[in-house]
Image (cartoon, rainbow, N blue to C red; front, side, top):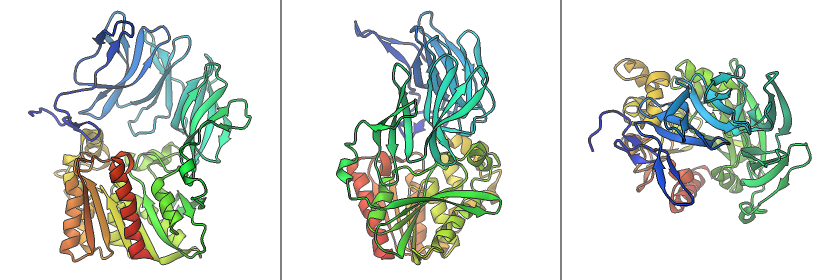
Length: 491
């Protein structure tokens, strides 16, 4: 393979070379296939116009980690660019009359809460300022003047309606009893379909009537294997750290305490936070007597635009700000009577692995750790990660080694990990292109050379999502192995 730019690999798709995801139209009657795009962009988030002429899409310039909202003319051919970078195009939907709505982040910071409306001929216009809602569910036209928005604010799910003629956003229904993901509406626009989950209930399909009447389950097959086995209860709380309210969720075992504690730091860190959603790892730990802490520090979606974007915008994602916020959550939990402060462990994956390694090296709060696919050495990470995040790492959140060498060295766990004393389980996928396996291997080598009890698990041919979306054998091994590690060192 010979390449001429950095867009030659992607964690989801592997080594790309010059291959890109192009759009093809298939005639269902004849089976004839027609390719309608070409070039260096990838195409995603496809949406047909009601008359069948236009196909809306997000055209991703992978080398620059930026997307353009476009429409493809399926009759006369060609492409029209409607919303250009730095805006990041998200969900796209057509109204029955043929108007296009696009949710996007005008700053390119992964919080698409500005809605744009228009037509292929007239272009797109912003409906108003940012909505402040994390649109993790989706958007749907109710009629030509009203749009249904399913998303998160203050860490809870809700429905909002946006009236375009008056630019009025109203909270239509509170859905704070659970996390409601995804969105689909029926033809009559009277019922919304979601995946509903809680900290102890796996996702299942539910129908939520838009007239306010009670929701009803449509399918509970995912919950049946766990029925009656997950008795933990969840508790949401907020901790003040300086002038910031840091959000978090607790999963508390049914058995008597005080409980050993596992702090689980999510990856990203941009994108929807945990916000009370089901996480199999948490349910497993709680079912085995661990009090599970799931912090949602700044950069997490679901708590407003400022909470999600301020740290990244300031280039402070890797300067110790977020570990400090998480530590404030940890200290608040360890002060509880049902928490055993002497038996506290930490789990982190991806960016969460960065935080876990940082805290293991710089504090004495933790008796054991698990670091999965964690960022260890920032200087090598920004130069070897795939372009899905590499461009933004270099241009916005971190920088490049020759321009910010001292800053990157100071903020890199590799500069501090030799001080770790707690036992650490390290794991990675051998085909991870987001946080390449050499990051985990460097951490393991540091621990071994420092005389720290440690193990390295390498999942063959597995990418960055091995613990969540990977081969079932790998996912099961990761769950059982991490539980065994914490049980050995915390109980």
